Image (cartoon, rainbow, N blue to C red; front, side, top):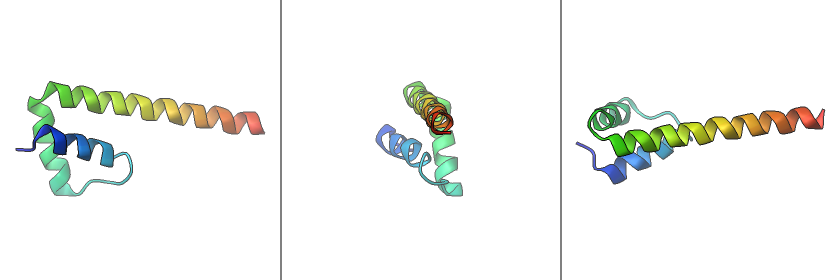
Length: 63
């Protein structure tokens, strides 16, 4: 089982590159039992979506 520190690393890493099958499997198992890490993943997803929205708005403003 992953420790929270490694799970947090994988959660952050998946924002930059696809995780390997093994990494995804380990992370999914960890998230099933760890609500703080699940919350962290949701927070990063929310931030990522907000940044995409800001970038889109900036691109539209330039046109």
